Image (cartoon, rainbow, N blue to C red; front, side, top):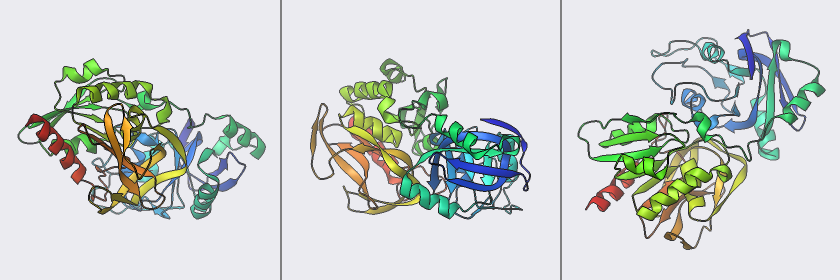
Length: 380
């Protein structure tokens, strides 16, 4: 990605999909060029959390909500220290933000962090195209980067694909750090950072958990060096088929029988650790309005998602794995995608979505309590 100065509203920009579809608009954020996988997010709120979610690394996010930037940018809501999206696509950006916490405009923040975006295009048409054709590589070009269409298309088609991408180590912490428990400390959890969001250890800290966040390269020995009551595997970007090291570490945890909880990428890692395969979804689930049924209770939750890969596990049968019996615990009601796994003979479970979602919904917050219950049961 190359960038220059902040984009003026009249600076021309062009979005080029790898199948040749082209959309023309205006620069939004930084001026220059960027490449990534084009995906769409259906959330009407929470754009700061979306932008700063490490799971969006190397993805160009198309916002389906037409008005974006209305509440500006504040210093409280980011999920990490930087914006991770490769590019940003909006239809009608706010001209003047209005919120008591706003410190600057979204346009200014994107420009300051060198994120190339485009505005003024028909995001509904683009979203329908991605639903029909699937997520694909894309380039955004503005200012001097705008060239002849054929040359731009060739460059998009040369960009790396998401399938086969090993990205966790690119977004994870390089040094361990500790998030202390809020109030009385009850448990210690080792959290393997594959692209963790800041709200995740906070949700655990609220429940009296001291969280030791470890790099993606952490070994089983590193995990147990903190003497954990439980182990957590976070969300993150990339293809789970490439994540051999986290899978190996998780198998080591399962062998010891320590309570285990995984979210999103962590769910895919658990699937692989149990012997299931993973596959790329046509266009993924991204947004804050996805219906999921918890099969252990029968309840339906509205949930926040950000994933382009899924676990290939049988929905209606108990599977025998190297670590005992396993079953699908949660399922997406839109398309029957596996949204959660649990072991029946060991204290381990995972979900494909985000119970920590700061922007909401909060229907799935109980999953952190379920993790606490596993640790209480193990201690007893």
